[in-house]
Image 1 (tube, rainbow, N blue to C red):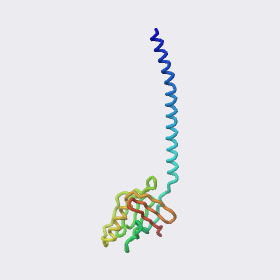
Image 2: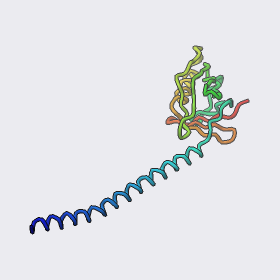
Image 3: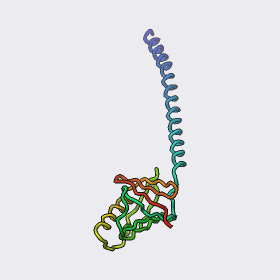
Image 4: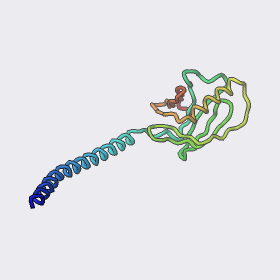
Length: 161
């Protein structure tokens, strides 16, 4: 009988002790939910602040990594409203699917190129230009300047005609 009373008392103490644990767990869950909602709102705010990629605008490359294109090489870029990119890469023309991703990245599918051959400096420039375009660069537009930032450098374009 004495043991039974002790067991009942212990069980009662255990139940009393379990209630604060349950209450603490509910508070932790509520805090976690509130944090998740705040994180979602913050992500929505960031997306709202992101710029829209300028479509149907012709861009002419001013410099790549601080250097102008070689003489005789023109590099251009134009992305239409269906996110089809086209332009000149120095020697050859190119086209591809190109669209803006999150956090102002520029994503591109495989390019289609014409097969002209030009002098070696222009071909080297073309290769570097296309590699930069297809390296998931971050982009920004300020006024009439479009900037693409890659791991290997910065491409700076001006609005064309």
